[in-house]
Amino acid sequence: MAVSSTFSGAKLETLLVNPCSSSSASSLRAYFPCQQQMKAFFNPSLGMKGVVQKSGVRCEVAQSDSALEGEKIDPSKASVLSALEQLKTSAADRYTKERNSIVVIGLSVHTAPVEMREKLAIPEAEWPRAIGELCGLNHIEEAAVLSTCNRMEIYVLALSQHRGVKEVTEWMSKTSGIPVSEICEHRFLLYNKDATQHLFDVSAGLDSLVLGEGQILAQVKQVVKVGQGIVGFGRNISGLFKHAITVGKRVRTETNIAAGAVSVSSAAVELALMKLPKSAHATARMLVIGAGKMGKLVIKHLVAKGCTKMVVVNRSEEKVAAIREEMKGVEIIYRPLRDMLACSAEADVVFTSTASESPLFLKEHVKDLPPVSSEVGGLRLFIDISVPRNVGSCVTDVEGAQVYNVDDLKEVVAANKEDRLRKAMEAQAIIAEESKQFEAWRDSLETVPTIKKLRAYAERIRAAELEKCLSKMGEDIPKKTKRAVDDLSRGIVNKLLHGPMQHLRSDGSDSRTLNETLENMHALNRMFGLETDISLLEQKIRAKVEQSQK
Image (tube, rainbow, N blue to C red; front, side, top):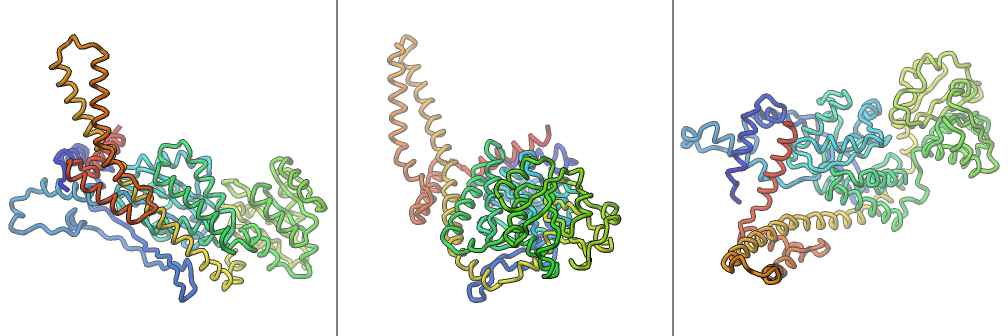
């Protein structure tokens, strides 16, 4: 498909008018794609799911735009082509060869330490702002943020894969203060089908530290809820997350993955009991700081393990009272947040699960706490399941204190590994089927621009011919006659377009029908010279550049 000269000229003009701008500089110079190849795979013969292979970071410097694309210029013509013409050609080719891509740029408990994840974490209240900023980047059209205690993942619809990844990584570095090179070292990148399968795995609980845990599905649902009404949470990304919710529900309904499944909170309780002497399980003094969703689950699992008395510190008593009402027969003592240190002095195990963005416990807070009894091991345990962390790493230097965070839950998760893998195998078949359905639906969206272009093309012809007709009929035409002629022209156009439009519509459920639909789309593009992909891409790139220059 030929590249319009207006596109090349507009792009070139942008590059030359403001060569010192970041957007222009990134287009002119060879960018530095720090790539970390992450491959999650499932091998039925080995019974392994979600094994992550990670190669080292590779930063390459391309020598020229043409080298970046692997293109070679005929030496005999090199003297004829000016550097200006080469730039125009390569710039246009790069943009028009790529289809919009769904990309996930992420760091999770599997690839990055909690020290890094907590700096990158974005509170739910900040998701709309983050989506707006991401969509303001030159090559990002849609975006979503999935930020939990175990992962920080950004999903985008990128006009260009490489440039989109580069811009998002730089944005992550700017907002977190972490150098780009360090993010590259720990991030994973997945594109299109791989990105789709990854989110489906996440929603199904297969990528969780605790297999099958249900809280992640609720968090995926929250992404959709928060994204409603936000312009940048567009058709592709919202469709991906909505389909992921369907997958998560279906996997839990049709497989045994949720049977006996534990959560991060229950794993925290298990870890505490593993570290306490068995003789102290019934007598250890338990303190839970935070009565939100995670804190409530900690309380429930403590009760399930036989704990009949605990202290809960929270900002207000309302949530604690509701938990107490739900768990009758258990002594749950409420204390306000100001009493946190006093309560900690009387506790053997301290669970923290608040949304505080700064640590609640530092070395100076813990060093003066009285020692715990040797009957409970002589160590006060801090089990911190918050991200950002509620307990500073400096507390580990205090004698008589032991700190565990979400990364330390792997010790609990390692148990029953064979059962986890068997359950993962059952879910993979469903995820593979749903991934195909989503990709087919996304492919079907390709015809939408062609439909709009064809209608606009027909409407321009209709309006022009109608104007000619009316001008020939004179100025004294009754309004009723004008309306009748106008209706006649619309009726003819609609009837002529009905057949082509029917052959451009597909819900993606039938692969044979979808293939035929895409063939029809390409045929119509050729016949009517619609050049849908290039013209739309030109408009998007121009709009992004103009917006960045304001």
